[in-house]
Image (cartoon, rainbow, N blue to C red; front, side):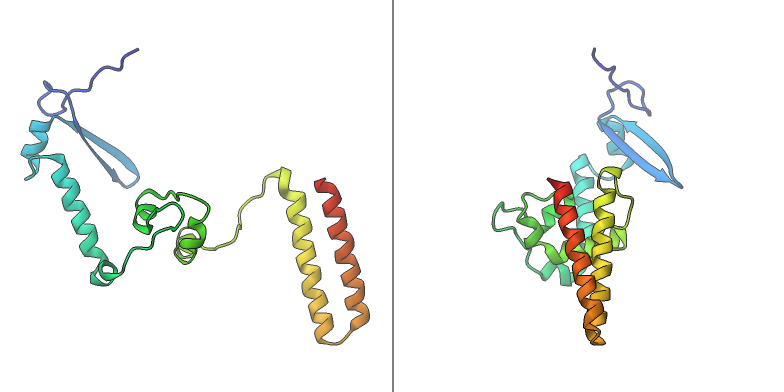
Length: 172
């Protein structure tokens, strides 16, 4: 089934080829215009001109410092840091190593942390809980070693080993 073509919202005659979307206070407003009406609203003859202007504005906003820095590139797949930033897609698993520092900064910026802090699917909740308790026991063991209470440290070590063995058997 073919979708009906949308008409220009201004002249209501020609096919709309330009779509302008604005989000104002969370509400989406969309304007669909034909090429002719769109060129009358803006000083650009082609929509690509608007794209180029926006790109140049964003570049100038970044400042001279970022413009002077060379772009990092993944050695394996050739994806550049700029490409990642524009698409938010990495090319291969090696990109995580190549862009490690930048990815950590982005994670902190978007999520507030570089480690998972959200809900855990029920399928993995038990394993995560055990890993957490093993980590807690390790901290307690390190403290016991620091204060030279080796008896408690040995008991904690044995508990850790038992939990790790139980965890391994569940995975099999």
